[in-house]
Image (cartoon, rainbow, N blue to C red):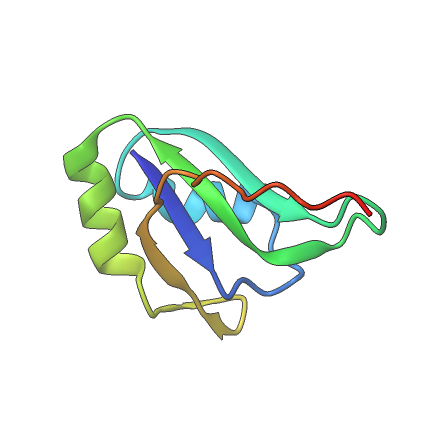
Length: 89
């Protein structure tokens, strides 16, 4: 299951995020989203867990808990919707 993690402190690393979720089961991937120009975190990321029941347990346990001084928001990630095309002027 793909899990969205929001309201991350900008200092949170992928390893810290992996460790927080690993307490609940196998973490297959972690991705903290960063600005492509500055490289700074955008304050959210995604965690992929192999087992859905472990992922549900992690979501319930970690949502609205403190990680590096900020209460994180954790829920199942929604599929990326189709983006409207931009008009070319």
